[in-house]
Image: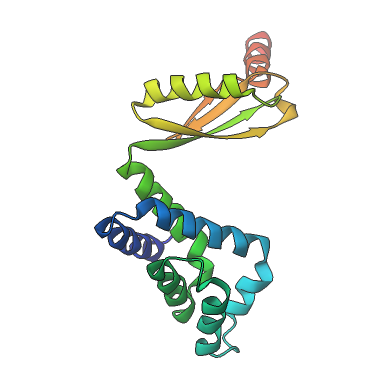
Length: 176
């Protein structure tokens, strides 16, 4: 993430906070970001210097004009006009970080050997919330190579409770 991406995200977040639309702007940014991720050729078109700037910003207006808050639409057009449309994912991530900090929320990235049940997810979120002293949102993934257990990445810390890690510790002890 560049310093410029942080500056852009902070500016948009400040605008959203003034009118108490932080979550709505986050949702809008994420929907644009997801659309661009699903259609990388669209991002390339918007980044192409051979396409006139007015045409590129017009394409954004056509695609999103009725579905985005005006400030978010202007933000995406500004990125495009300044040749920084490829920075949208970094800006979105920084905006998400600012939003989560403002509402005392963190995201825990959980990887397990098998899918977690809804009850397991709820209990894990409660325990992580107590541990981090803020509300925790889970993003879950499955990695069968773990054999069993889970790994959690929360606020820059990794908690590895996987069976693979435990077996590695035993192996290291035996080999000494």
